[in-house]
Amino acid sequence: YLDAEYLAHPTSHANLTLRTYVDHNQTNNYYVLPAGIIPSTSIFFPWNSTGLIGNPLAQETISGAEARFDYRGMPTHILTTGLAWRQEKLYDVHFVANYDPFPLPQVKDVSDHFNWIDPATRHIASIYMQDLWDIHTTLRATLGARYDHFSDFGSTFNPRAGLTWQFRSKMSARLTYG
Image (tube, rainbow, N blue to C red; front, side):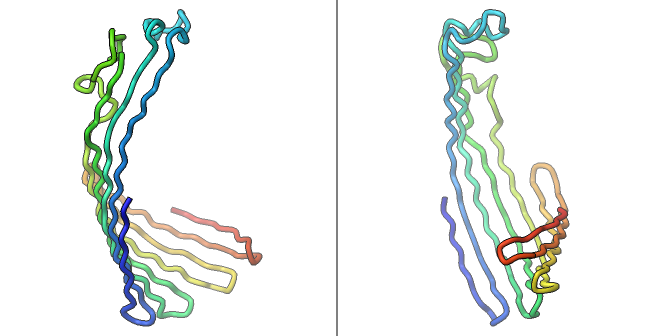
């Protein structure tokens, strides 16, 4: 995981944060159901002599960038707005097993006809805004909205509202929507 962030203070009441990141993950979930463990009455009984062996493999890279602006020019409000972009890429997807879904004499790559997931790439563009409003020293309201556009299925709009009451120095209750 690599994350780089730059924080600027264009005025005494404002912060600008620029962030970029990349994360890589390799999936290797080898599993074995040992020989002899499957009851003879099970539909999976043909694997009783060899065991059930599988290994789903894939690589995933998530990268993105974000620009966030915070404004604290009013004594009881913190206004935040931002833009974000993200790419999620799943690739090098394979499945090695001794079934496809029927028993095979040996473990082999069955990716061409019995893969566990398809390779895919998704892009997400977002815009958001939020207002944290200190109504009282023990009461804070949160109002916000986020719009996301996903390249593979469309857009979503998500409003958010919340109220936090701090009734003791280290205890609070929170009511949220969204």
